[in-house]
Length: 250
Image 1 (tube, rainbow, N blue to C red):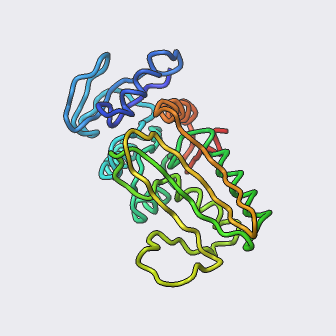
Image 2 (cartoon, one colour; image 1 turned 60 degrees about the horizontal axis):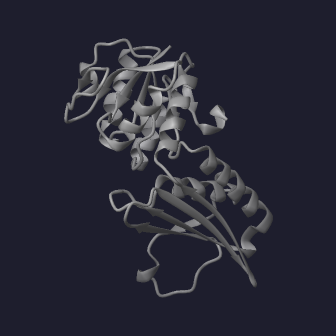
């Protein structure tokens, strides 16, 4: 039985994780962390991760980027505790901190916990390897009006995957309206839409001469991300130090 610490237990994703865990027999939420300290059903809730006294195997974090350092410190202070980092909006410095910490800690990090999105990433890499520089690449992501970061972490994952095919030679462009020039061949345009209750949609557009190929993934519910996080947490119990991702889980 994998004992979980759920950071951000009072949020929408925290609630979704709780609903899925109740239906499983291979894991349980031993404690939660939420800055509001709002009581939850079936486990104690703390306002900071350092206050947790229960035995924990894996942390699932759906809270806020500012909590990263405290979560990593907790894992260092409790050897053998793994962390599944699901929060989006990490800065480049925080991403570097995750990579460095993974040399000593078992960490699972993915900007998107969906199986379908990770398949989309593989398809985008394949398309770029076949189509090459003769096709322009644009990425469009759409999310609900409460999402803070833009572009989404998943859009950046897609861009990074395509860029890897071109050995890091691509240039990311986020703001075309301020530029008065033609598009360069090595650009990847990233565009964000925020509105209503859109759960998440990502489009990768390959535009060539007289033809356009579009790869699309639409998330119908936040629950798919919660399910992926729980699967990752069970997978991470007892793992050695290292940086794990959806590729390892799949």
